[in-house]
Amino acid sequence: MNSRWAFGATKRGRCLAPRLLLAAALTLCATVQAQQAQTKTGTRAPAKAVARLAPELEPKAVDLLQAMSAKLAAAQSMAFTATITHEAASRIGPPLAYTTVSEVAMQRPNRLRVVTVGDGPASEFYYDGQTMTAYAPAENLAAVAPAPPTLAAMLKQAYDNAAIYFPFDDVMAADPFRSISEGVNVAFVIGQSKMVGGVATDVVAVASETLFMQIWIGVDDKLPRKMRAVFRGDPLRLRHQLEMSNWKLDPVLAAETFASLKAANAPRIAFAAPQPPARGTKPAARSASAAK
Image 1 (spheres, helix red, strand yellow):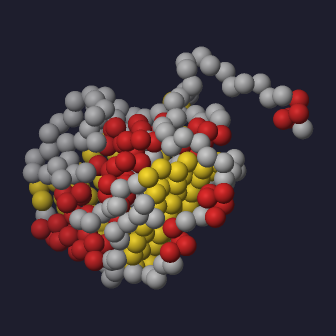
Image 2 (cartoon, rainbow, N blue to C red):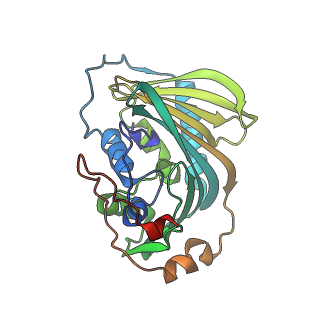
């Protein structure tokens, strides 16, 4: 399983300055995103050993995943709302929950817009096939960089260069099933539900050696509606959830969808990953003028 379909973090970083806020670009901040991607790609060592799973691939579960993936892969453009909730450890024990909402528009092979609000700084991200732009509207700062000509290559560069990560990127992949099925040795159907946005869904469980996840798939439209994941090596069993709604497949998207005049005219900063503050560093005191 390509665990980028999950979206957790073991710690919540802090973004303390406008430049850090912008470089984070999406969700809460890039420190969290870097931890997420490291954990999901397996570079982060598990907290403890987990029991190996006996192979169990239910044909019906595999068929549902393939149908969902085929529906997504066939769309030349798409738009949806992504509501992301992840738990993070707190200093008193019980986990805290953080939520962001992203309005997503994508057009194959090389267009993307993500506008994010929620528990953290608002942010906007634009990709037009030639450049990628991360924009912080509150600070009116933009980072702009040349980008590869394909969505997959751009997403990799955005993470490598600026720690920008989208929990829903595999939904937009050319072959979603390949991303889901990689490493999976357990897949079974749990049943049906009407509890996600009032839509009838088939609920599938999938697991690998590192991850357990439930996926709610529309009975009629075969679209992913919800994903809920836990990392098997996480001793806290923190939960990570992605809900997708307001689906539109093959909408007509104007070229200006993937650009922002405000971002184009904003002061520029470097397109780079922020660094967390040094241990023990305190935020700078506000000046009297800033406090007014």
